[in-house]
Image 1 (tube, rainbow, N blue to C red):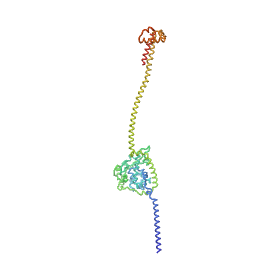
Image 2: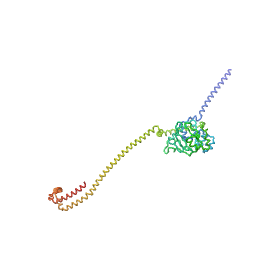
Image 3: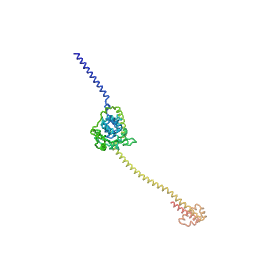
Image 4: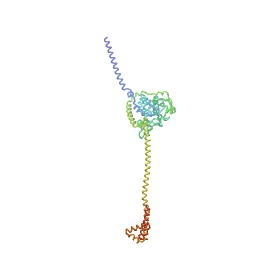
Length: 458
């Protein structure tokens, strides 16, 4: 009996030890699985900066193309198979016969896009993971990037694309649609430049967007994007906008029934994309996103004034009033000052003319006086002297000598008498000094002639 109890106790002890060991083993195994869990879970969600960096190279693509690229990114294996099958060609019949998702078949019609997605397979895988796990963040990132390009003046309507700002599902969105009904253009641009203000030497607008040859618009573009309302959706080639413009060209496609089918109302994705390990790429993506975020912040600081005017945050109104009033008032003051200055200049010109006129007259008077002196006086003096000489000669040389030989007192008396004789015609002075009277009379005549010359000067 005791032997049986002992055996039972031993068996119970062994069972307990085995159970404990199993629990410990399971815990260690669980810890190991956690360490090597799927890369999507280990890496965590994409940050906003990560999605911006991830989507920057395709955010400006037309909406119908984006609506095919993002679902197709979850089928990386099919994309690689399509690249090998087509080898850079676009063969609609060959594509239609393949067992690929309709999104892959659509992308396969555009060799450049397909080649990019297969050559950059880590980027395509990250794109698929972001779309599967964070579709709302993907939409928001695309709209943010389009807003940056539009603010920089690089996303505008052109012959290849129509860019419109609309309200969809209560939110303002930027829609990019094909401009031509027969073809669709895939823009090519540098994502490090197009979202920033154009540098010197670059014009705003389409200068930073390049377009190759237009690719055919076909029935395979059977999706559009419902912004903030579910993302890509099947339109069945019924609707307005670019769908209505291009429907007649899409309907002539020989494989139309391959793409126009209500079964495509459900947009398929491959969630196994999360099993692909892209940890190294995710680390590089995060570093690049930080660099881009810093560059964007620096570019934003340099555009504060322009952004303030664009967003209408009050600076626009203040600056508008200030500029208008400042220019108006400045012009008024300037015009008033100009009027006053013109008046002052006019008065100054008048004063200058008056001064010049007086100076000219003053300068002319000496010249006239000299002209009169040179024209009258010199001409008269020789004539007067000749007349005087003739008068003296008629009176006789002896009389002249006697007159000149008189004493100063006699000459004064003679001159006085001559003056009185000239005024009253007295005969007594002539009787006392006849020769002197004649001489005095001759001198008086010369004086009168001289006075006439002098009066002429006055």
